[in-house]
Length: 231
Image (cartoon, rainbow, N blue to C red; front, top):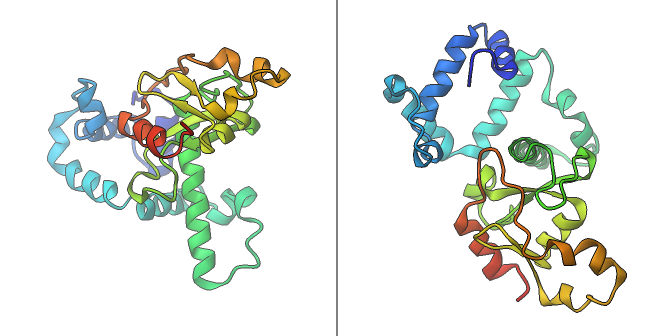
């Protein structure tokens, strides 16, 4: 949140503000962020009364307002959402009306979630350490379809490479509340296969790489273990 941070400077330029003012406002938001409060970070409490209503509104309507903020940001950058997100929106010509709007919003929000999660894990797989962006996924702990409120919560995401993302999604591997990888019996049945020793035996009980900010929330990990992980 420091005024010399490149992202702060970039945002300040887009908004016509000074980097110091942007950093200060982010400090105000930190003062009402429960995550930072739990970490013992107080933030700048002088603007709490100003930012609390904004925080509450955003928190309770994340999907709509994350999408709206991306629209506004694109305008400030002198572009459009369609241009900015061309790589994930270019195949929507077959959709019409409300279906287009709904799909655009979903894909943009998923892209924002991916950006948050990859940044949180410094663009490295939490299990293998692979740092090739094309091979990385922002894996939801509680699936997108199961909890609308937590879809965009970075505590509900883990950066995983494609193999472990799919294995986690299908419940073949899990992560316990100590942040250690556990293997399902389905995977252990394959322990005689060459690929088991290459890709799975060494990761059992391995602690995932700890993110720089948001840890996976305990309740989300428990949900995955209870409802998705194959016992």
